[in-house]
Length: 224
Image (cartoon, rainbow, N blue to C red; front, side, top):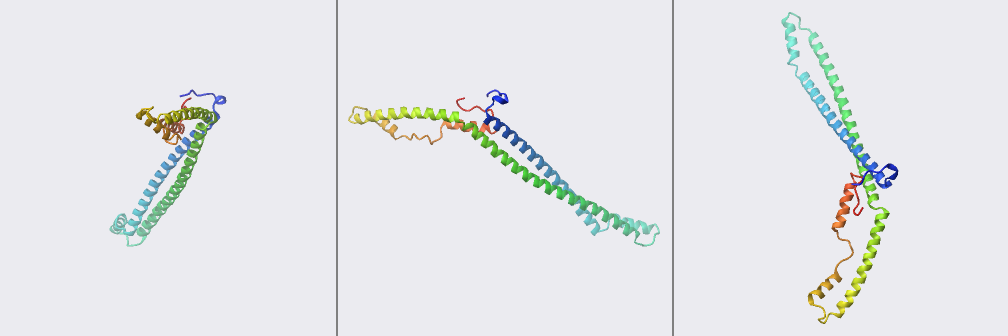
């Protein structure tokens, strides 16, 4: 790994990549926070809704505490008035209203958190795209491309020269001057694909470095 350089001496492309990586890390962290907040809000919403459902069941079938209070009132010699019923109804309505408020609050909170998650997901996608764009700028720097182009041009000149000489010698050795195995080998070389479109260990090394650059702006390029 190359040592970290001072900011004025750093490759501008790598500096942009480092900034993009930091933004991507921050965006992913914000997404995790939003997802956790959504999970907690959903749990609170479910708890409030469950409590409200239980209150509605209790009002629909007033046989528990309400019946006990009414029986106790009659047993104490109080007339069969509506005071106990009214008081219980008021208490039940107050509880239901309070829980309904909780349900509404947590439902709105959950919805806001879900919106935040979608926004953070978009931020993460944009940050990832920026990292990849900056990584492409690092591997496609002009100096590296020029060096590889110069090397290829020189090698191609050598290949063309060697192929032209071999073709001449091969054409003159078809009557037994060249052994059959050697003649067949040269013929196979003439037909070999030299376009460089197929993957090689060298291109695999560049691919690996590119993937490393997505999280490490100081990853060394092959040949550095």
